[in-house]
Image (cartoon, rainbow, N blue to C red):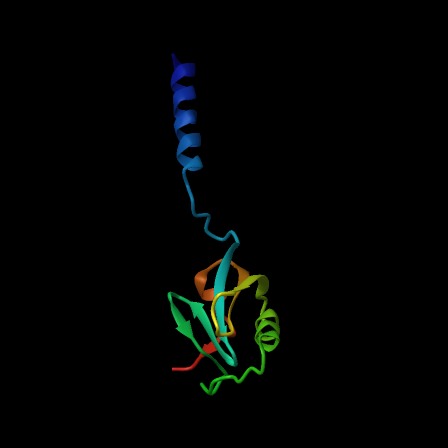
Length: 115
């Protein structure tokens, strides 16, 4: 009887831990979407669009999409994919990047936004 009871307790412990989704301290990928429209660049983070700024809060002027990808890659963001709307007459382009983090706050390190 003790063996059966022990078996049931162990099964409950194993099944309870198997249902856990979050693992505090484990790294996960945090994604952002860069929307490029000609020479205007907006970074979609935290549920809204942001314009990247320097430490003084002034917008950073990027000449092309390569400059913004390089800027973000220097602070550990990695290029994932991009797409453009071929049917649109505008030059809209969406670039997806990710960063491996252990908290959402870590994703925002070294990023300043225009207020």
